[in-house]
Each structure stands twice: as C-alpha cells, then as structure tokens.
Length: 296
Image (tube, rainbow, N blue to C red; front, top):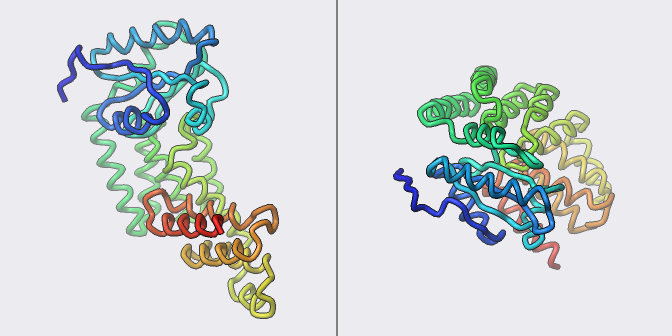
C-alpha cells in the first residue's frame, strides 16, 4: 500500500465515525486512538507529542482524537476511566494501550510495537488458521499446543489467546482456560473474540454444577411455571452444546417472568449469545427474539 506524506494521518473524530476511521481503517494500517478532554492538563502535552511521532512514522500508523466529553458513548463502551487514555487498534481490534502522559521514548517504543509485523504477522496468521482447523477437527490438544507457540511469539495476540481458551474448554480444562483469560491485555478485554471466550468459560463453570436435562424436564412437566427448573434446563442444554434449545427455554422463561431472580433469564441468554460470537446466525436470531419480547 502506498503511504504518502500527504495523507491525513491525524484527525479529530466523533463516535459516529469510530467504525470507519478506527475499526475499518485499522485493517489497513494501525490506528492510535487518543481519548482527551479540554480540561485535561496532561492531554495538552501528550496529544501533540503523539501527533509528532505519528507524522514521523511516515504513514505506518494513523491517529484519531476523541473528546470524551462530546463522545461519552464510545468512552463508556471502552471503559475509559481516566484521561489521557490511548488505545492502538490493529485488524479491527485493540492490541495495546496506556494511560497518562508519556515521554518521547515511551511514545516511540509504543509506535514501534504496533507497527512491527509484515511477513512475521502473516506467518502467525497462517499458524492461527491451522490451529483453528485442528480445533474444528476435534484435535484440541494439538490446537492448544499451536496456540501456545503463537502466544510465545506474540503474547498479546488476541486470536491466539481466544483460540487457546476455546481449546482448553474443549479439553474440559476450565481452570486453565480461566488462567489464559487473565493474560488478555486490559485494553482488549471487550474484544468480541475475547468476550465470546469469557462467556464460554462462565457457561462451562455453570455447566459443571448443572444436573441432567431429564430431571428438569420432569419438573417442568409437573409445573410449567417452575422457573428454576426451566433455567437449570437451559444451563444443562448449553452444557450439552444445544445452544438453540437453551436459548428457546430462556426466551420462554423471560416471556413468563422477565423479572424472576433479578432478570436471570435475560442475563444468561445474553451470555449464551455472546459466547456464540457476533457472526453467529443463531446469536443474531436470539437477539431479535429477545428484542421483540422486550418491546411487548
């Protein structure tokens, strides 16, 4: 890709532009996001220093500035608790970040970290694809070893971390999956792949305490308004991998009593949907059905 000095490397954006100028743009070149405010003293020194470093990088990285006072929605989604906060996005995902003012050396090192890659990254991507195929083929142990090797090369690789979590879950090693989750950088905890993996861990932990579906079906046969039995049935179904049936039971529970147990049906339903990932047709269908019930 031809990157020239005439490119608009630094710009102020609103949250409405976030998907285009950060998520999509970072699939071409890393994008630094500077969260700032007019009243923030350290922001006034960090912002110009970042801009100068980005310009010096000559097109290897771009930068956007977001005023948190004017864009509280995206600041809330990314859990910005203090400013200045800086995130780096690459391939549509947050990969690095820091809080507070930084000196020139720290800023230069930050930009170097997020702009390194090229052929090495391509090799890692191929290894991730191979590991995913292993996992899909039921070779979870081999997949775990491959994902572990990738993380050894790139400890913050979110695809590999997500893959290793899913591999351990497939092996029934929930505690090890939880340990891998703790390795995820704070700036990336809400990444969709990581969020899905976290939800899968929570479901697996709940499933460890779930009983057999037969006993819950028997309880419901005696009393269709046994909400705990229906909730437990959904949990057991999810544990068996029957997410569609689990979603249906939770939707039925929500329809019967949405406030039961502090809204437990909705909470568990959203957890299953999240575990399926944003591209899942079943997840999208479940969200639509839940939305229609909420509007009733």
